[in-house]
Every structure is written in structure tokens, then in C-alpha cells.
Image 1 (tube, rainbow, N blue to C red):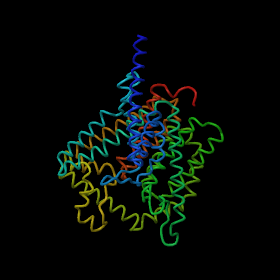
Image 2: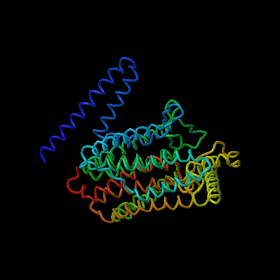
Image 3: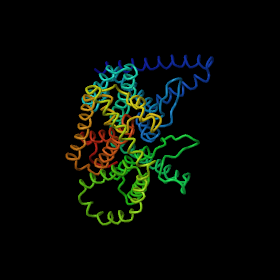
Length: 460
């Protein structure tokens, strides 16, 4: 047996050396004829090799850059957001690493596919709806590019990388830092607004005419909805008085910025998150009751400002009418093709074909809510499969809070953050993006660690 192990290791070293010499020869030849292209290729290989060795580094970068959805990289007719390109690179590194384990070290091959059964039902429904659509190839590409990609890059990838509590802690730190940077950018945007003629609210900041976070306050709010509670989860590890004060300051500041976006969806979700949190922290409710009432009293001018903001036609009323019309378009599309829908990715085409919408609002928009999008694009089978997926995830999270009460200080904030962004996407457009699914995957990974008793003991 020992001789077989020695022989296997020797064969592996021979293969690695052979690959090294072949690559070296190719690089030397490349430098002679294509120096710039070869240099970029070598850099890419080194980055990929580093991520293969430490894939958690890529996950930390994903957590930090998750809000950057509007910084696009164009190559011929292909446009890909920076965060998706980064996630694709990290996913590739994980696939290469697991391929090596599958070929040479099967004991360490441990790729897992969380929520696979319920996801595959939804994906099959999406595929069938695409085959029945008027633009089959474009619709099938949408299934792969957006639906399959979010599952592999933002659920499977993080779930497999977060294999111990140290990685979990670090990724939460990067979430917290990212949320803090986004909040600071939002506050900075106040300096560039017209305080005399416009309703002022915290918005994403533009840099040299580019809005890397997008140009809508909801895109900023959906980041803080997660980071606020993920920051709170860090108290599980950082228990000193100074660390507690710093985390509390970050949470209070983030909460103020979230309120300052004057996003209706953000306010609704934040209230629901607080209610869920207090249900499981009954002792805390009595402590904060009086201070909470005082805060609500002090925020009365803010509530009045919110009412005025939403009463303005070009802000609140117009937005409401816009969403009502999008819902009407969704229902009409559903009734036209109730079983499998119009095909994935077709919602924006349905809006473009609606004369009333284009006459009133101009350029077509994608669905502002995951429910109306799936109902129109994937029909009854799609919406039922998605409900099953959502129900399964919620059940896993609820069971975790019920079964792992020793870890409630960690799991409860994670669940609140994940459920918060999930509810948020019933009002917004990031339903197939990492901003929704990466937080959920991190929470599922934390639940998995608790299940396998990898969170117990010393909190390091």
C-alpha cells in the first residue's frame, strides 16, 4: 500500500513537471512574437493559480465587489458586468481544483450542490418555457447566462468555499466593509445634489460620469439591507467592548443611510427584519422599547418627508403607476400562455411591445419584482417551482434557528439579512444576480457548518 502511494505521488510530480516545462516553452515562444498578449496571459494564469490555491480569496473579493453591477466589460458583442467576470474566474478556479482532485486525489473531492433538487425543477421549467417561446435560442441563452450562472457562481461556489468558521468570519467582514463603503458613497452623493430644487435623498455616487453601483437608490439600499445584519453577525466573534462599539456604530450609520435612501421597499424590509430579529430576541425587545419609541418620535420629520416624497407625481406616484402597469403586462402575458409562459428573458420584450408603456415611460424596463417576471416568462410551472425553491430555503433557515440555538447570535442576523434581500427582490430587479443569492448561500453555508458542528467551541 505504501509503495502504491509513493508511486502515485511520483507520477503526479512527473505530470506537474511535464506541464510546467511545456507551459514554459509556450511562454518563451509567445514572448518572442506576441509580448503584450503573452504578458497578459501569464498574469491571468498566475491569478488563476493563486485562486486555485486559495479560492477563499476570490470569495472575499466577490463579497466586497458584489454591489458593482454597473461596471461592464465589453468584448465585441459580449457585455459582462465586472462582478460576474470576477465570479466566473473564481468559479473556474474551483472547477479546475476539483477536477484535479477527481483525477488524482478523490478523497479530497468534495463538491456539493445545495438546494439542487428544487433548483433543477425551476431550471427545467425555465428550459421548457424557452423551448416554447418565439425566440428559442435567445431564451435558452438567458437560462444559461442568468439562471444557471447564479446557481453555480453564487450558490454552489460560496457554499463549497466556506468550509470552516474562519472563512465564514472573513467573508462577513468583507460584506461589512463593502456595505460601509457603499453607505459612505451614498452620503457623499448628498454633496452633489441640488438642495434647493430637488427632493434630496441618499443615492449611488457617480464617478467621472460612471455609476458603478447603478443610478437608483434601491440598488444602494439592497446592499445595506444585507450588510447591516451581516455586520451584526460579527459580534459572534468580536466580543470585546471596543469591537462591540465599532460594530454598533457601523450598524447605526448603515441604518441611517438606509432610511435616508427613502426607498419604500427598504423601509418595509427593514421593519420586517427588525420584527423577525426581535421575535427571536424577546429579552432585547423590553430593553429597546423605550429607546425605540424615542427614536420613532425623533424621526417624525423624516416620516413627513417620506410622505411628501411619495406624494410627488414624478417620484412616488409615477413609480407606483409604473409598477402597476408592469404588473398588468405580466398578468396579460400569463393569461396568454399560462402553463410555461412567454420564455425566459422575454419580459422586457413584452414591455417594449406595449404601446401604452412606451408612450408614458419611454424605454422598456425589466420586471420590478421576481414574481411578476417568473409569472410572465415561465408561467404556472415556473412560479410553482420557484415557490418550492423559496419554501425549501426558508424551511432550512427556520429549522436552523430552531435546532442550533447555541449559534443564534450568528445565525439569526444572517437569516435576517438573507430573508431581507429575498423580500426586497419582490420590488426590485436583482433577482438573478449575486446581490440576492450570495448572501443566501453564505447563510446556507453557515447552517451547514452548524449542522456538522464546525461552529462550536472557541470562537476564532
